[in-house]
Image (cartoon, rainbow over all chains, first blue to last red; front, side, top):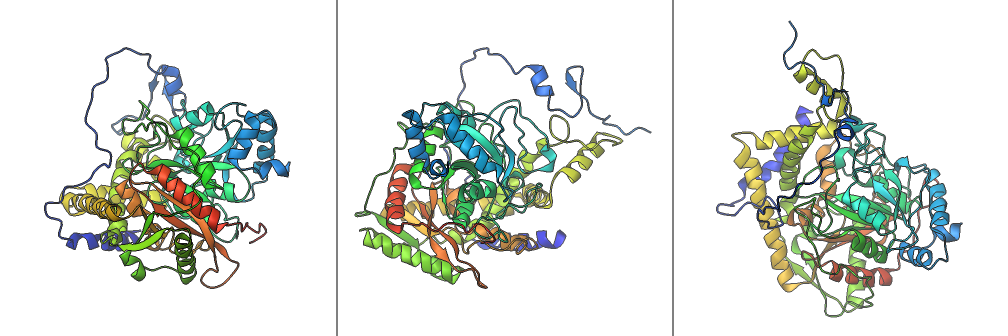
Length: 71
Length: 478
């Protein structure tokens, strides 16, 4: 895979030589301004429903292995 | 029964709405057709159901790309990491289809997380092209395209990030429309590259594409980038192209295009002129850098979007790890396929400190230049036209060892995605593949300014009627 990635990066590098000083970057094509919606309370998703697709739900939470390896 | 399957979506919806055909009868006819899937187009098929007898899509069964979350229905995005996942909610696109009277006929196969141009990156096996089962249907919406072309669905939903609706539509000989970015809500559409992803229809006709777009488009409070359009598109009816100006990119003469594809493209230009349209040339000097910019921006966004698949909240988890990080690593190593891993690595590399400006920053500037090129072209022209794909459908396995060659399939479709503008592929003829074999469909791409969908559909309709494409897949090994 390393060889493939190098080949792709080599192709991508073609844009490195383009003279684009001062060109504004485009991160998004729809021009949007941040707005705040009305602060109206509404029901959240039921906890059980969200936990249902989880690999290891327990006591209303997602259980994961310990963040620290056991000695 | 076969008479029902021969109706266009528009005809069927009208007859179901008028009570001449039952929604259940029509759904069952398509369910039976879908059950005969020998193309691996479907990952899941509805065992029952039917649409409503009212609405713009009254009783219309729709094959939905498996990237759209559908409550209670498996949704995998073609990935092992989401095997067995049943989302707790339904995407806005699917909800709108249902509200218009439509029903989900099945979920279609796709390149994993929509990353691919051949459908060979699906964890559930490749989709076969109905025109020649030794060839790819294109991708990433390959299952949707093959289902419609192969007579397994009357219409389908796909998504297009860099060509994933238009290219498979071209390779399968059907219509594929990528609307303006923001036209259709992305809520519940599993994210690949959020600034590019767009839902759209794959259909047998331009009229059907208009009908689906009308049902799907509109502002959705669940997607802040969705844009509401007054009224929505109408069924196209234009018979000529007089007064319309079509730009061929000046650079196209030097671009790598198969001779057969070029021949069909030029014949289509002649048809445009016969219909009263004007053909000219417009420079799109940065379009050739579209692939480079795209393969920085899309992987960068993907590397962030795919961080969520960590074996904690949904999807698969590899058990037996000593700690949390090992679990993440084992789950992602086993759950993701090679192309997804490749793009995550490209994306994180492009975003890493020290390389950010050179790759991601530069790619975003190229994106600006590509959008400016289109804007300049639309100053003098109504549309920009190109072949949809440089070649007809290629053989299974032909390009799997060369990711860059695979990426080049999107050469003509990526620039429109980067600019966020609408583009359609309509079948324009057939060509013999390089190396010989039965003739295969060729797509003609038309791009228009943002939110000019009505104009795009009118011109496509006039051209479609004049071309009169009526070739059909042979079925048995082409």
